[in-house]
Amino acid sequence: MELEDMSRTEPPAPPAQPPAARRRAPSMADVAKIAGVSAQTVSRVANGRPNVDDATRDKVLSAMRVVGYQPNGAARALATGRFGAFGVISFSVSRIGDARTIEAIATASRAAGFSINLVTVERPTAGRVSAAIANLAGQNVDGLVIIQAEILDAPSLVIGPDLPVVVTDTYPSTHPDYPIVDTDQEGGVRRAVDHLLAMGHRTVWHVAGPQTSSAAHERTAAWRSALADAGVPTPVPLRGDWSAASGYQAGRELADLPREDLTAVFCANDQMALGLMRAFHERGVRIPEDVSVVGFDDIEEAEYVWPPLTTVRQRFDTIGSLCVQTLLDQMENGRGTHPMRVVPVELVLRSSSGPPGRPTT
Image (cartoon, rainbow, N blue to C red):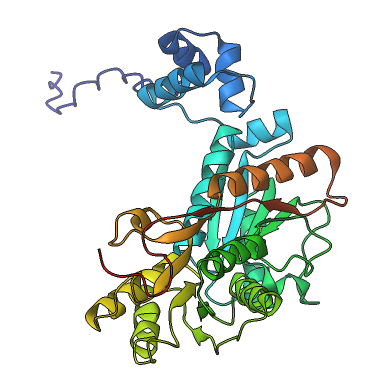
């Protein structure tokens, strides 16, 4: 008699289900459909080409965000020979002038279809700048902007000969191997000093910027030169560090001078001028009835303090545009030799300056 096999067997496993289909990455066609443009237009925007009007570019960028499309940087570099980014090295972002320069470079870069990669350097030594340059080179940038480039003449500093470079906010004659874009420092200071002397002030005191800054040195030299040309005494300058706090300290010192010796002050930047004005207010020194004050930069706050600050207006937007245009020129034609580009300034007259001894109204 056969025995029934009582062993139990597991039911057959259900047939394997096909793996879930991977979500397809968004394509240029998806972007084109949403933006209502051709795939070629999307490609031009993705590759940073300039031949797209602003309204169309905005539509395409908006559609990219909607679908989550990310341009392939490596593919773009192969197609265009460009990475679509500029490197920026700065030794400070706390100073308003540097921050506005960086903002202007970013704006001009974006208009040209480029982004910026910013690296800050704590101290302008050759080793730190070399490390920053190597860092940016590793990020595949198409060109380099160096702000406050005092260290560029160090023999241990090496920048590849094929990398487009432009420097700004530096000595005009320091770096003949690199194109320079800078504010007309001397012209701006002379306008400020001449303005005060023309109103009858016997001399102009000066709150200078830090010794580590080329812009501060240029402004102090221009102040000395303007006073010497006018044949008036040159007071000993007070040294600040660009901050309002240092201007405040300078103001406390100057407020102790006899009134007949102090009737006008030129500050190397607006932040120090604002600190100086507060110190004068606390000491009962009237502006401009007792002392006229002039700054440099024309920061946004200069128009809204009391009294509104007379100052030298820098064209940061022009500086940014010229830096980017200089890089683009080098990308097309090689580094070569480039003349220094000097950006004009404007003296903005407000209520903080006037004739000496003007009575209160």
